[in-house]
Length: 431
Image 1 (cartoon, rainbow, N blue to C red):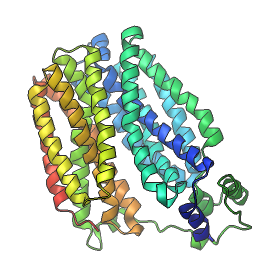
Image 2 (image 1 turned 180 degrees about the vertical axis):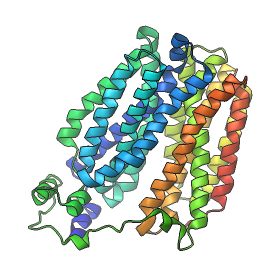
Image 3 (image 1 turned 45 degrees about the horizontal axis):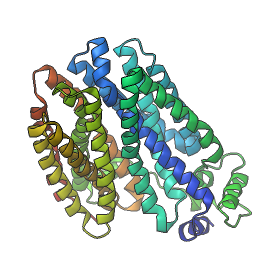
């Protein structure tokens, strides 16, 4: 019966209800793109108001990323117990509260704590968004839907950056956090009224009224209803452990993909977090610094979309290696021309294209490394290890800025991890 329910979704046309569910997930990911980078957009003005050092700015930039890692590891698993939709709502409330209170922060410690809170909400929500997008998409549109959801991140950051530049000039940096909190709050009623619960959660966990809820969703999708739930043994999903990633000949690939994620995220989050601040330090205005950040994310939209298209025509490993090599070239060139406005903007766009393509490539490659029984665990741990690099990137850059490092030197340094990631990817055995 479970196979029949999934088959009707996989092979049939997508109903309006399914399309709306996917669009809500994409929109929530756009909010995440804005929320994650809001500190990068406001860093220069926050540092000026409170007289912060580079290391202190680095801590604020890493605080949200630390929260994301904590949310992914400790909050996201509750979705298996209480439901994807319930967790998304909880996380959305955390994001809203964190953003609104951030607009009233009285000092860096308070702001840092609130950035952690906001990050916990973001990290806890992302996995559930991916699950719902995949479950409510047909086979024909699933890859496109998941790609559009991933691309929602740079779209949200791009739109958010444009709005942030306008708000900061007119109302100050606090207005950017206030705007983010209001928009997050406005999404709550849409999630309550339009976002469905995970089908697999209803089938596997059997909450009270599961059969009625399942049939309600099937009717909304214009699918045939069922008279009873399938046997629980037919829907149970094997629980893989960390140790399973090092058995069956997967140990080498596990270590290599962990290395790749760590190194790519180390460079990725340095570029996204510090570029606006470093452009301002090089003599540009706050608006010009944010423009550089926006161009990075516009490049991300292009890079993610182009990689998704190319991945249907060429080998993933080769495309990933090429993306990382081009990122190294772009970052070195960006470091050399970072003080020249025209070149800096062009290279920001190119850096965004290649570094986002590098990130998307790892998400595409990882599922091909493992069989189905350990695939989710393999992806989860790879992302988790990568987030350690994401947390380290802004902190290390802040310490180096205080030590007298110039923008060009930082970009040269952070090009090295992409070269290491390229070598690690070359060693992978893609199934």
